[in-house]
Image (cartoon, rainbow, N blue to C red; front, side, top):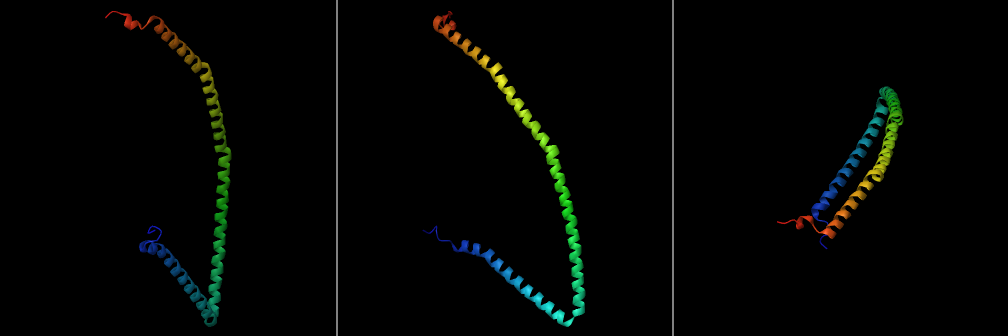
Amino acid sequence: MSEDLPTSNQTQQELIPTVYAVIGIIVLIILGLGMVGGIIYLASTYPAELEALRDVFIIALALESCVFGIVLMLMLIMLIRLVNTLEYEIKPILEQTNDTIGTVRGTSAFVSKGVIRPVVRVTSVVAGVKRGAQTLFGNPRRNLPD
């Protein structure tokens, strides 16, 4: 029964990440509220400067979307090159490998039927004849005088 109950050390180790997550969420909420309050204060106090700041952020976002567009085009080009590599270089290699495996299978079947089986049959016949001769005539080494 004592194995079912968690120890205080295990409970503390499980609570530590939860505490960090809760603290992080609270800090983000406070920062968000502070930013909203700051923007409202700046809008009522310095409207012209806030409009200029807004324009700078709009320009920055436009530049960022241009950069993302360029990066997406580069990724598309790389994806097209990858597909071409797979289709025109890897696929023929795999087909040649399959052909080679088929050839190896055929060769091993031919060697098995044409070489191994006859050798096994001849060896078994020779062993049978040798054993039959030993049975009929005895062991020739034992027949020799010492």
